[in-house]
Length: 149
Image (cartoon, rainbow, N blue to C red; front, top):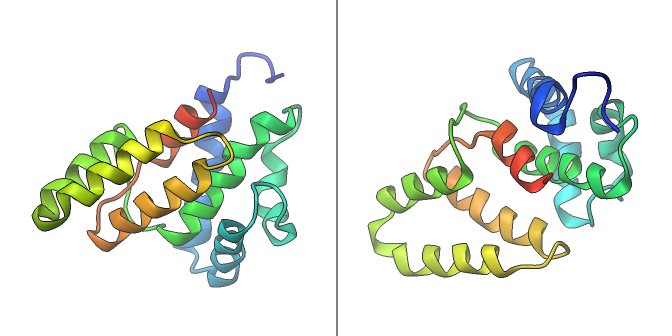
């Protein structure tokens, strides 16, 4: 239910992530804190995230909305940098910067691949936390597109 010529992979995801980046660049710590609070709740249930996410959801089904809430909350926890490429590429960079913990990273990655839709936010939160700790940026547009499919 995208607008004419618009897909999840296109303009909507890019506009949404650019909106999140502006919040960070403007130093809106309150907005980022509100987004992070969404990490503790199922996607779309933390009311404080609505003002930052809802304007981008017009015409989407609840299942299509969930990735926007997930990415917004994850972004709130790791807004620095601009990654490029897949989430797997970001995790490979984490792995390269974390030689002593490769086994646990591999286990977390496998858990991500095997998780249900309900477990996805938790698994992603764990891996994004590792990326943040190793200062590895995430390509939020790509991640949104990947989990939105």
